[in-house]
Length: 359
Image (cartoon, rainbow, N blue to C red; front, side, top):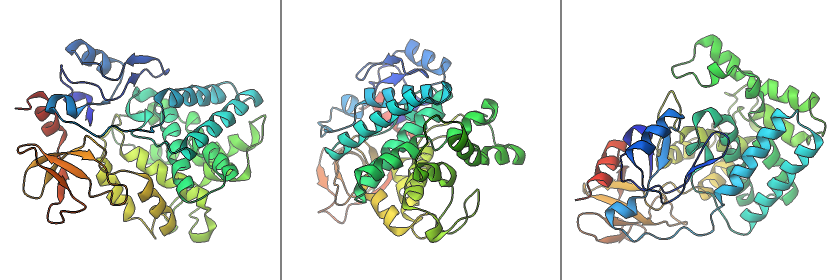
């Protein structure tokens, strides 16, 4: 379970490692947090951490197998940072291609991604970490849609560099803790055109036209409501829309300096409702098959008022996983027991209190 930094308490156990903005390991999976740890994380700008609910609540959770290793994500993050900051050389470009091919091979072998780098790194590395998350999710969605390996490489490269233009936006605007002014928002929206220009004129190695299109069009929407050109329908490629939905999902589930993250399930439901409006039906359908709205360990409230923990996912019916009712220890498969329904996820305050005081 992900908790914002303000809700972390000593004694909680990490469910994923935490890294610095440079990709250096700070705290490993399984580490028990101390008051000193939490204070240090606040000072360096960590906004949230993934916490194990099974330790405090004495639960036997399904082990998550075949998950992309965090070290692979960190390697991609450092490589894309080097690519941009070292003037996008041919050598650094080739390194990115090889890493994207490695990710594709991992995904084709059945591996998936739980959570993301932008959830466990300092906020000042958000642009690069978010780009890695969007790249991986885009490839997973593209694979779900049956894209060829060559198309997945183009999708991966375009998605990894989709926010390239943000490196030309003042950092004080990108990390502003409050609401943007109208003028600041206009500047932010220029990142698509800036990135498109950089990809066309500043690279030693020419990107594919499909990857360049993603950089320019990932904020365009199926109904014409997006930017920078208000494209709609068939004017947008499938790759543009895949990156667009992955970008929106990753941004909404991540804590930022100016707002709290939404729950996975909330964003899942919102994006399912975007079919035919923001994104095409086939892209939304593939997205829905690529995401688990209730990952193992999620703490929820049932329609009878009881608190419960998701102990097993159900890929064919993702909104109806297997849960364990906390007061009674009863196990319910929601795909079979249709009278039981998840009403909501527990709030951050409730999760923090429950894990700290399980009795």
